[in-house]
Image (cartoon, rainbow, N blue to C red; front, side):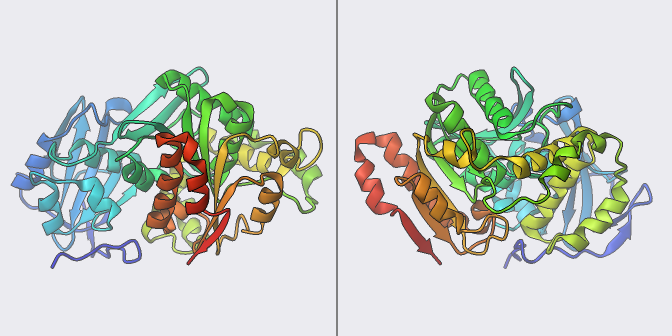
Length: 436
């Protein structure tokens, strides 16, 4: 039986010494010729699906209890050989899964999503390589690229065709947090997950405001560049606030909104406002960020930082944080979240009452960042909004993917197939429902 590498059960490999003097897991092959399955996988590489930044990347493939090999992607080709130096991404699985991935219907992305394969360090490179080496017989096709827009180059991954959906990640996150959504909804929609400016693999302009309006305008720029007039928008945490801002500032570009534990303007007293106003995000430009120190500290601060999706999120956060522009963007966006005015003529809650787009709010019963109690305030401002409560924390699309995606598809398909059937959707997704 093939061992399942679930997110809750990370691979623990014996520590060995690889060339370059770095401790790595797995056994270094004494052979110079890669195995047949690896040669077959490398030969399938399609640069039209994914090409690394700078046109070069090193992907390390580990077999549990077996050998370790590198695949170097450069100038549109992929070549396998013994491991050497530092890798951009590390992919780990068992021998049976690797051979299955290299087979005629091989799908490394699906192996990753089902927990049979782990990716660490640079997720864009790791998943991009898996997507670019999928068998042509496998269903669905991820496409990675950078889109030049009016304000910045935005990194996206997309899948499928049909009505457009744009997904927007949270503070400190990347498009990786919506990878399961891209794959799940790509069967019926054209799903586009974007790295916001300042995060992931997108440009990180110094001096940008990094507030909800800036992010919303940037997403609309992306729609313009892709030739999309209107789209459904799904946002998690900060991405939910950005999705709402698109609905408020650009109502003609939005069909329906799905808000997953959205970040909303604080209603309680903000005693630190004077101090936060004085804090300048640009100070992060001179803040030292030694990689060994941060990689040692973060696992102690974040529960489960070495396991499953939490480990992936930490990898993605640190990858952007080690970039000076990424640090500025993170602090600036966090500062704007805290400083946003809740009331008054231009206050968030006053403006929210003017939202026209049909909206589905999903709340986590165990969310410690955005309490589900916000649902009552949203219902007061938007009586027609719909609400779903799940037994999860702050990232429903990762923690409860099947329930989240089923509700999203039902909500969006009603609009895509027949807008006149809104009453049916009202009955199928009640104004307020809790799912355990």
